[in-house]
Length: 216
Image 1 (cartoon, rainbow, N blue to C red):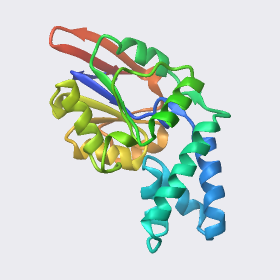
Image 2: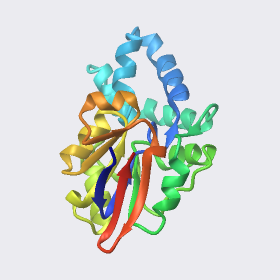
Image 3: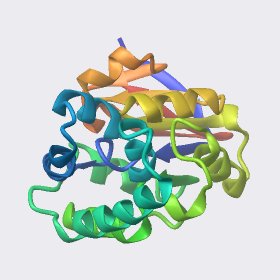
């Protein structure tokens, strides 16, 4: 059954939503975690969707945050340099092309360098508006990034549709008062408003007062 979602803006996460970078993210984070004796499963539950220094603070709560900030900078540089296996999520290019004439933005926990490297590796064009780690003071699951994107686009939060895959990102979108499309099978467990296996299930239809997303 086709689902129809009226919208005035679309806000897109990057990792796991537009770009499949799972292999490199998990490889580098597990390398980081090993000297600390952290449980790999716990690490993988925490790191997706958050800024790195916040993940480190959760995993090593007693550690000086200045160390987290320094190691996060190193991690971001390593991630930006390692794009082996980074590919576009199915339907990402078609969705971005369809959104070119409508308000949309990327809202990612990556910094500009990492976002640019991964989007380029996946062969995807970067939208005019991007909200990155440098743009916010609070990481997902805080809604700051999504609310800032909506404000800059001049669209009310309730008229925005978020595309996300991670628990932190889905929570951020819902907390912002937006409807959330969960991307990928595991996303359904985190309570998105709608869910798709990948972006090939999304079609954009023009409307006089904006546009409409259809699923199915």
